[in-house]
Amino acid sequence: MNLIEKATILHYHKYSDINKNHNIESGVDLYDTDRHIRYSVLSKIADLNNSSVLDAGCGTAGFLEYLDKLYNGIMYTGLDINDEFVKEASEKYKHRDKCNFYQCDFSKVLIPQYDYVFASESLSYNVADDIYHIKTIERLFHIAQKAFAFNMLDSNFGHHVLLKGYNKEDILLYCKKLCSKVECIDNYLDNDFTIIMYKE
Image (cartoon, rainbow, N blue to C red; front, side, top):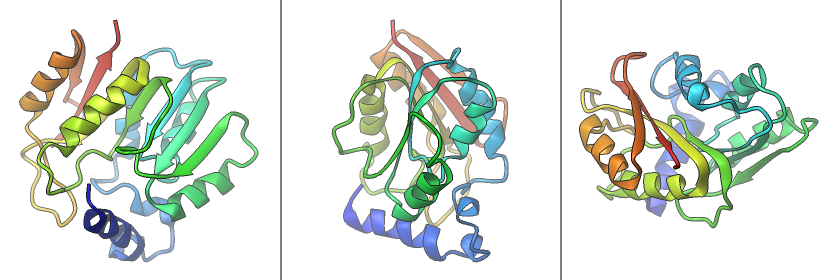
């Protein structure tokens, strides 16, 4: 993802009509209003009690709020390129133990390993680099000690100024080259799929 693409994403979240009600959280859910359905699919990856979790593209940490209702003792780290989202999440969870947020490009910075890595609604941006999403999937998979789960828009997704759909079979085939235990879930929302990659 180049500097212009990053600036476009930041500009969109900050100034688009979806965000004019001054509710920062509303700008995170780009695809539809079914963010919690995606969270429910991702959260079934494993028993996450007392696990370390990395949320790549965390927004204002809606996923953390969802996980905290299901599991105990999660050690959570959220990364996002949008400093407003990071500030909002940091303020919201300033009294929560074992919780950190950092403003950065998770596709480039050095990241330590976590038990579980998640990327929800952060791998379907429209970028010039045709293999950006492939490189990022591989990178995040290697950061995970137990499993990596992510969702993407599929190739039936229509035109959008910021988002792009990807061929599910191509993504799945690539993931199977990285590990032998891969699960694909695609029966929860139109034009959306989730892949879970388990470490051996």
